[in-house]
Length: 123
Image (tube, rainbow, N blue to C red; front, side, top):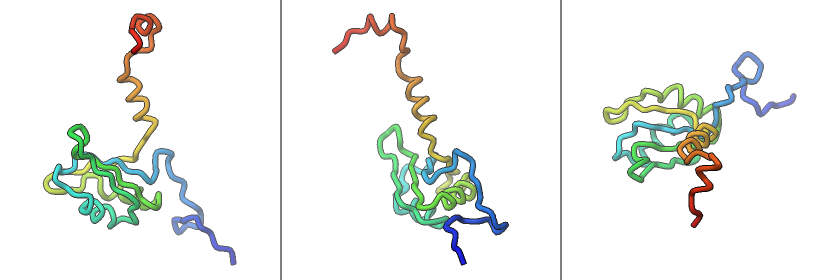
């Protein structure tokens, strides 16, 4: 009898997930005084959490990254914890999308116009 390491949805076939689904979640609208241990408790109820990174700088307070061991646990957490109320704040739970972050960061950099860069002194 062969054993499969893929999870199935009871219908016999493996579940195919959308491309944006991954094990890393980006969480916004967190209370500023929440601890990493509290996040482990909240997110750990939906699967094994590998890592929690809580934003501590002024620009990143109220945000965190949560990394799951299993992609299906991450998917369950997004479905169940988006809009979850923690200390009067409703969580925004998204999949981490590094490509979108790279695009956003590159748009914030000065334009790459050759004339503009030629007049900028190099240090």
